[in-house]
Length: 297
Ligand SMILES: Nc1nc2c(c(=O)[nH]1)N[C@@H](CN(C=O)c1ccc(C(=O)N[C@@H](CCC(=O)O)C(=O)O)cc1)CN2
Image 1 (cartoon, rainbow, N blue to C red):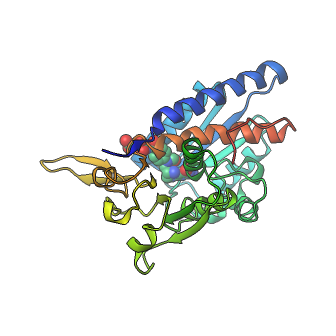
Image 2: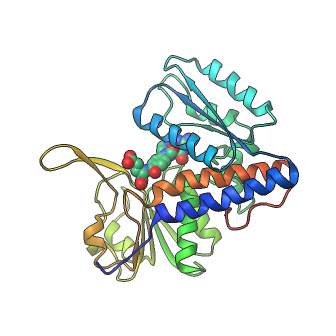
């Protein structure tokens, strides 16, 4: 393997430690404890695991953690009234509704109901607009985690050619905006892009976020490129059982890339670490205090 491994698990642990230190200072010096409320509707097993991990990590960082687990059949109106209650709760600085929500609930409407200042997922249209115009906003956790790893690896990203594969609202588009803000030349590629491998081969930085197992292979990658794999795909193992793989064929691409994130243990752990970072940022902003350095975009 030629590529350097970017260890997201270790990096996430260091982010969580820095968040914890900032929380201690907020409590000691200002008597303020950041609070995060996570809302889960229904019984999606993967979502239940993520919500449990978020609650545990929030408490470990010294923050207040509130979990609302609502029945699968909860009405949209009841969910909206819970969000309204959380918007008005002064002990809560961050609100997150775990996605996906059941089909009878309009996710867009729910996200629009969250106070943008408490929108630690960065999915509210106000935050999308602020990020898109290069202004201070709440930034979606997964792209923020990717950006932190890229800055840590490269220092400045200025002038680098970046290709983001995938155009989702929660990863692809905000990732492209963040790279642009750091002065990369950015291409958003997707399933209809002509000569996708050729486009990806131009990149110094590749962020793969398409949800197609092992799609990116070594012949798509310019030697020395940094490859960030956002994909989390569960596939059948030969001989039974399942395993997680990314959108990048790790073993193949590792032979040519300069640096690469693994799956699991890459971007995933950074998502939760950045949620904690965003909660502290939201708490500082709400109280007119200095934001934690190195934990925002
Ligand atoms: N409201 C939100 N909903 C969802 C988000 C989000 O950011 N906000 N993202 C995903 C799920 N997610 C967090 O919510 C998440 C996914 C994966 C991981 C992670 O650490 N993955 C591990 C592997 C885990 C495993 O073994 O299954 C890894 O990559 O190492 C953390 C958080 C959708 N919903």
